[in-house]
Length: 217
Image 1 (cartoon, one colour):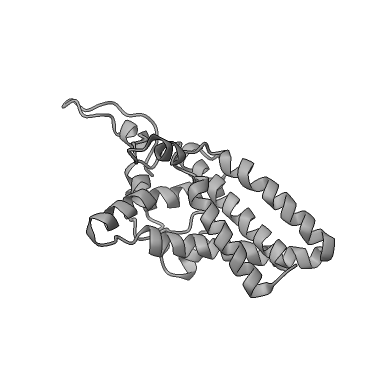
Image 2 (cartoon, rainbow, N blue to C red):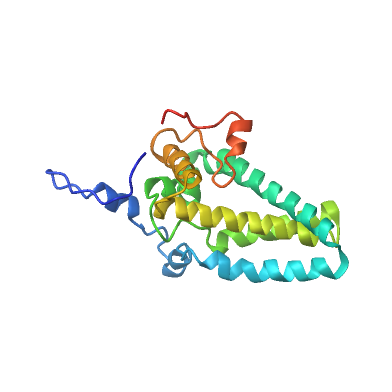
């Protein structure tokens, strides 16, 4: 498994590999946009935990506990599928032309170039908010109110789990067997085979869809 621990610079004077992995390169000439492209790992919690609490309140006003549980679980499952297919088919698609290459780099390529950048491991609100707005509107269309509230709550909870797990996989040395295995799978995606291991917080989808990393890595 690849390590995030610092390494020494080579005799030829190249920058240490760990420094390159942790680098946080400038992405935009506009300093405001560049600032907004970086976010502390706690920002999604500050931004979306109040939303989860609000949605829970709306849910309990009109629905019983069992209904809230199964609908929230369905929303969580939908998130895990969004996470998997978004990573596999959107984040890893290389679009044609100069603009396509730029879009791919901004969307996900920068993360593979600098995977331990601590300020680009969770989604900035500029990226996550449009996803959440679209998901909420689709949920209302598909299931209507009030079921949309717990379903969307589960979706948001799934997103928060994903962001926190993703950050942890790059910056925490896990003691548990499950945590170490998740980290091994994700590091294999980064450093061995980027065409496998697309599920971050829900690795069972890689097994179901035939994109699991080799157990030998």
